[in-house]
Length: 267
Image 1 (cartoon, rainbow, N blue to C red):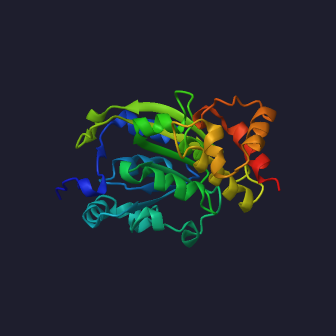
Image 2: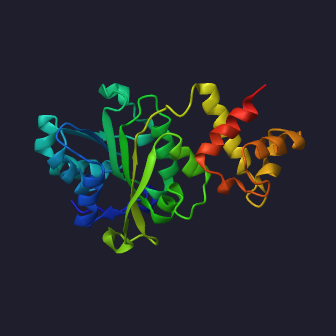
Image 3: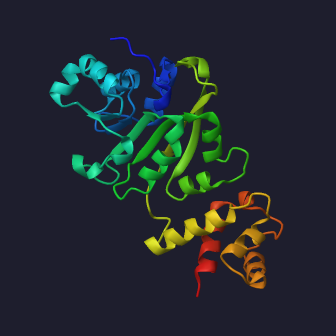
């Protein structure tokens, strides 16, 4: 069956054997693993995962591709080694498949248009994966790891739950059809909710971060006025934490953010 990639679904099929190998390697895929794959497409990565993992749960939204995958992996589906789901990954419930926190890994070439939603969905999931190895837009990968040493809402959101690492660039020519930009493999390890003491602190942290990045041209202290009207109190907190009053939100690293959150959360 010939399948034409659907632009509306962000379909760009990976055809680099080196990138496929590197994704399995970065995900440390082994015989005991249960892997959740997002958007298996025509099954290039699925095939490699099945060679190494105990079980693969592949979620594909495109019904046409489901038929191709059913035909390609008929033996693995019959044996139960591959569970193939025709669904939207944002609705996936790990509990439905008896997955426990830290018991499964995500390895996937994900659509650019829902990268942020996928990352947020699983890092904030109650039943979190042990790790995530993702092929994403290169610019997004660089932003997640703060390669230029500049933080963002995205980078801080990831680092609050795990440890991101940039693995390798994947040139756009290694996809069919070729996208307009290059991609990169990243891994997120040590995923947990240990950074936050409770849900209240977690919610306050993200409220603080979003407010602080609300106006990029403003310095941090001016953006903080959205949550604290007393500018004197803001300056006092920043001075106490040894944060330059001319700093922007992007200049502040994770360790300072939790201290800021604690300071502004005090009654």
